[in-house]
Image 1: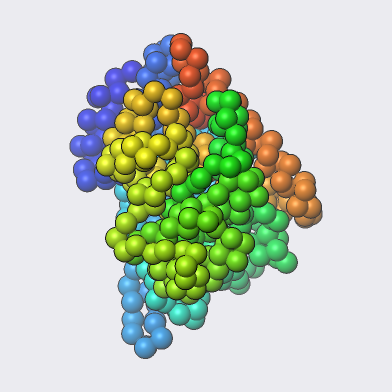
Image 2: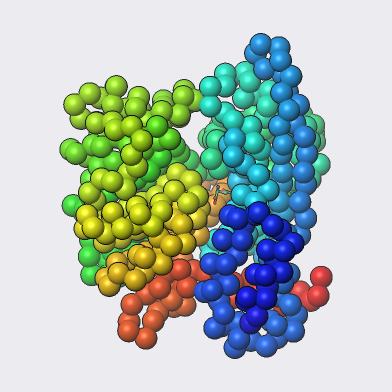
Length: 448
Ligand code: 2IT
C-alpha cells in the first residue's frame, strides 16, 4: 500500500485536521501488511474511500440563554461509513469540538463498531457548545435547537446518535423529545442511551466502563495475571470513569485516582461506593471540577491542582476522559512508577509517541480505545435491537451479551495481533480486525 502517498494527499486536502490525520496514520501503520496481501483492495481503492466520510452535515445553532442573550454555535454530523449498517455513534458537546475532532471520532467509530460483531456503520456528531456552567434550561434549549436542524438527517435505520463527552441521559432526553415532536414518529430507536422508562437499555449508562473492565480482565488473564488486588488510575469523572470505577471495584481492584481539568484526586484507600455515587452529582452540577470530591470527602481524597492521574502510582492506567490526554512524558512517568498495563477507555486517549513508548517496553501491555471502549456502542446496538423488537431485556441478559461481545473483541485482537514472539499487539489486532471487516463489506457491495 502506498500509505505515505495516501497520508500526503490527505494532509494536503485537510490541512490542520491534526486529530483526524493522527487517527488515520495509526490505522494505516497497522494494516499495511494485510493490505499488501489483498490486491483487490488496492484495485477498488478501499483505503482512499475509507478515509473520506460518506457525507458531513454542518449547521448553525442559535439559542437564547437565561439572560436573554443570543448565542451562536457550530454543529456537525459526520456520516462516515455505512458499509456494515446504519451510521452509529455519539454526539459530543465540548468547547473544543471542530470538524477534525469529529472526523477522527467518526473514523475510529467505523472500526470500533465493526469489532462489536453488530451491524452498525460509523458516525459522530456534536457541537462547540460548552456545557460548563450552563443551567438545565439552557441545556434543554440548546438540545432542542440542535435537533431542530438534525432531525431530517437521522432515523432508526439511517443514523442513530447517542451520547459522548458532554452528552448524557439528560441531553438524550431533550434531544429525543424534540425529535418525536418534529418527526411525529414515536419508535424510540432513533437515539440510544435513553431513559429506562422510554426505551433505554438497562446497563447502557454503565456499559462503556463495564465493557472496558471486562476487556482489561481478559488482557490480564491472557497475560497470566489477575485484576483483583491491582491499583487502578482513572482519568476524568464523567459517565465513562463512573462505570469503570464501579466495575473495577466490583472485580476487586482498587481505584486510587480520578481527575478533572482542574487537577487530580488521589484516593490512597481506594474509591468507595459513596464516592462513585458522588461522581454523578459532580457531572450533573456542570462545574467540571474534580476538587469537589476532595471537598466532599476530606481526608480520603486528596486534590492536587494541575496534576494528572498519571502522576499517581498504579498497576493499571485507564485513560477515560479525552483524546491525547496521555503524553509521552506521562507514559514515561507511569512506567517509572511500575505501571504494567494501559487500557485506553477514552477515544485515542494516548498520544502516538506514548503508545510507541509503551510498546517499546518489554512486558508492558497497551490496548487501544476502539477495542477497550466498544462495550458502550455495543450496548447501544443492543438497545436498537430491543427497540426494533419492542421489548426490553433483563439486566442479566444485557450483561451476558456485553460479556460475550467483549470476549469476542478480545479474541479478534488476539487472532490478528499475535506476534512471532507470542506477545499480542492489541493496536494491530484491533485495527486489522476492524479494517478487514469494513474492507470486505465495501468490496462486496461494489464501487459506490
Ligand atoms: O465513542 C463511543 O463509542 C460513544 N460515544 C458511544 C456511541 C454510541 O452510539 O453509543
